[in-house]
Image (cartoon, rainbow, N blue to C red; front, side, top):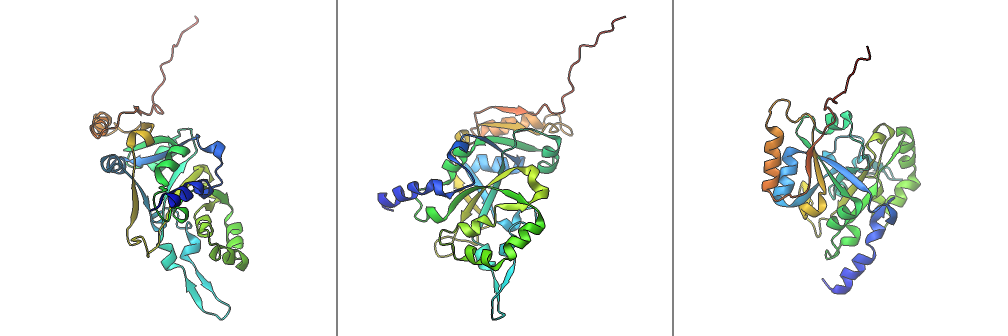
Length: 266
């Protein structure tokens, strides 16, 4: 690829940030990995995005799961388009909660990693990739009532604007909206858009190389990790260190009983 094309991709890089400003780039963001997937990421030195069909909320990716009716009565399916996308969620939520671990670490073996928007975006967006401008996106998710979402997307003018958007952002926007019931997640999402002409869209995941010590600033382990195996946390730390990770690793103190200085004034 020519230097001019790489410079063009760099020039348009910030334009693929959706509802994220320059002032947001150094904000901390977080993601919980199960031990299995964290070890895989550290071993392969890769981050992995999966197809929306694998996301937990069945209401997500609902536009591309739907069929559209043409004026002449014909039905149009978005099946082919749907296979082009891969995503990964992160959260702005700094506060550690009991719900966080119970939802995202059901096996009590989860790890919360910390990074910044800038580091995540820089690791993901590859200006040397010819089709970068229409492939790499990072957007803040918005949360709306289900009826409002349905009304918006059932408006023919909305669907038309999405399909005629040459920038590719129209389809991306459909992957950045969730129901109000999920607003506690406070998420942003990496999205990779492939195309069968220049990408193998049969792959279940899109993986890209990362510097694990640059991207993952710190790792926090599930506070329940030693509940069933007293050595689970220490063994996991040793395994992570053996893979070359050198940044801080701690176990959450969420359930640690505080030491009280109780006194009787009698």
